[in-house]
Amino acid sequence: MANNLNSDHDGLVELPQGSAKRRVGFIDHGFHQSTRSSEFFLEFLRSHFDVVIFWDDSYRDGGSPSPEEINKGQFSLIIFFQLFYPPSFLGQLNCQNLVFVPMFDSGGDKYGEFWLPLRRYAFISFSLATHQNLKAMGIQSFYLQYYPNPAQFPFSPPTNDLSLFFWYRTDRISWNFVKNALSTWPVKSVWIHSAPDPGSPGLDLSASDVERYGITQSGWFDRREDLQQVILRHSLYFAPRPLEGIGMSFLEAMAMGRVVIGVNRPTLSEYIIHGRDGFLVSHKKPRLPLAPLDLSRMGLAARAKVETGHLEYQKRLVTMAIFLAELGNKRVATRITLTYLIVRLWTGFRKKVRNAKRKLYLRNSTQ
Image 1 (cartoon, one colour):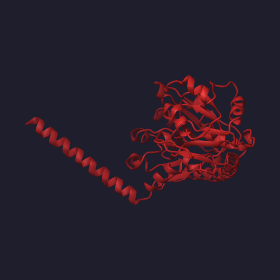
Image 2 (image 1 turned 120 degrees about the vertical axis):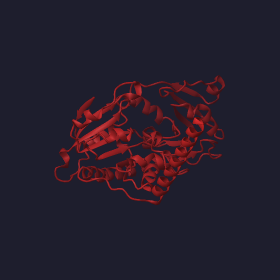
Image 3 (image 1 turned 180 degrees about the vertical axis):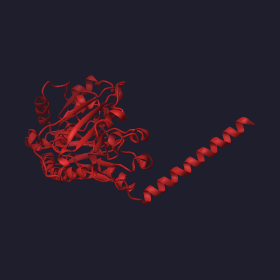
Image 4 (image 1 turned 90 degrees about the vertical axis):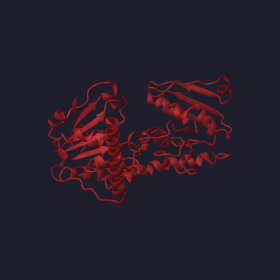
């Protein structure tokens, strides 16, 4: 289903002549209608283009947009947000100025061969690791590191008390994982926001842990402001997932001046400097320093990083607006890189081996 979207945005920039009225198709995951995870990106697009959005509900056995439906829009640019379609689908689109926006936790962590069918298209990467993988394959990628506006979040100077807020979302970062990471720290109290993702098991706490760590549990809050006030009452924030697409939740915690702890993998590892503005732990053996550092100083450093990062993010939005506008005027350029050649040769070799094995099998089965 397609919807026209239009709204104002305070970051409007001057684009090349005629580009502000260009029609852009935006293909998005249907789940984002409820989570609004893509709203920040749509807000940017609406300020510069005439955007038509298509929701892909195939994740719940619903419908997905057909090439014929998309072609009716006569778009100069089509953006796929956190979605990948097969080359047979993409080849049916009249508009071949296609842009993919992968997230590291849902496709952005792929390497080499995965990207071969998509080399002719452009990408917007919110993870540096994804950006580097694409560039190594000679694919055009625009890197954009997101930072929220810190002015939109409450802030209070952090203290050195060892109180922790933990949003339980998935058993990949379980309470036992958090407990092991904090085993050398005399944690005073823990607030567990028990709101698991769909398909994740519920939280099971022992009575001894509840007593020892002074655990308080909560579910979803009616008001976002109430949740933020709870986070502000704790100096530490444990990031809820080992991999992130962007990491909105921990970035908001940093904006509030909380010291974030999480797994040393993207995208958290691309924001946190261990021991300066947060802590990074191994996913296999989570262990923090024997004694916590100056949490007050680290919380202030985290807030300052978001302030600086948001200013840089606003500048990059200007560049990205021009990047997208120019894509509507020209074909995407690709480069022949060493990595691309190696992957292409290796893929061709594997294909020949598979074909040879298949022929040998057919020959033996007929004898």
